[in-house]
Image (cartoon, rainbow, N blue to C red; front, side):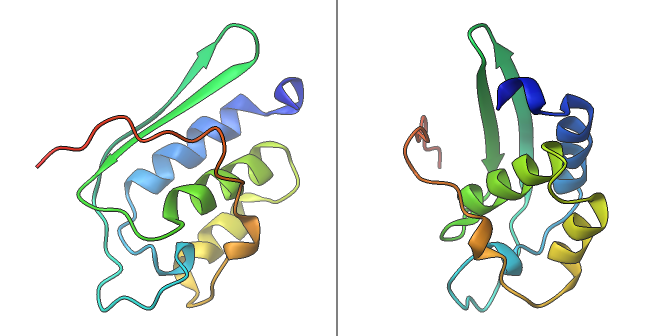
Length: 112
């Protein structure tokens, strides 16, 4: 899978996420406020086909990270296009079918 990823698309989509605040489509719950402010978001490419996704925000919604990564990978593997990604932010529709499994995801740090 690693060699099929379009890394340019991966990086472009990551920058687009950084300018959006409403993550309604990326959570299963109905929160009063779905705004999350992304402070830092980046991919790290390591040897042996390892990708590290780092994100720092003021808060996270349930399934938000798993859904974001799933959609980014679908687009960077050319299974979805950029318009689909913009639709995720514009429509009041849930896109939870793109969740990735939770194994391999680690919480590294919590700050207050």
